[in-house]
Image (tube, rainbow, N blue to C red; front, side, top):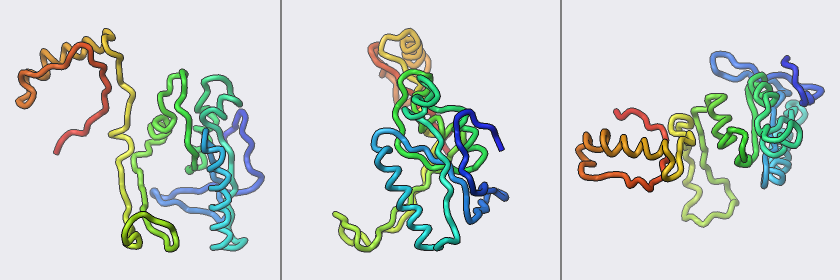
Length: 212
């Protein structure tokens, strides 16, 4: 069990273990949660009630989630200090317990992290974004025949992630890249000949997969 600087472990519960990538979930798993910022303050308590009620409805007293509060975002800065948006305690807790759930997180100001969501995806290599979309009877919907909706969307979560490689217009790095693109890259492209990038442009770069 790792030692945490400022986290309080739940009094009971077991760790979710993994065997060849498949989770072995005990009847009383410990699940770290990040409340989140902004609407997260309202969303998380409601989410917890729904999840606990669903488990109670399905399993009675046989199963229960033992929630373990960890910190990220503004709430982390209040506890761990200015600009400490993603404390090591939180990272170690998620690594140890293998799962976590989070609410919406703020965009950090300073501190070297452009996006907490991006940071979490990178640290834990969360490459698979699985989005089930299903209609539940009785739910209001603006669509025709919503009962026919039952799909799962899979999104690659790390390769196309926004890396924050960017420069303001007329920044020296920006001008150097524009010069390289205009003089070296664009002339060798069949589709971009006789075109150029204006020096007054800003640059934002995302990684792109190899084609084919």
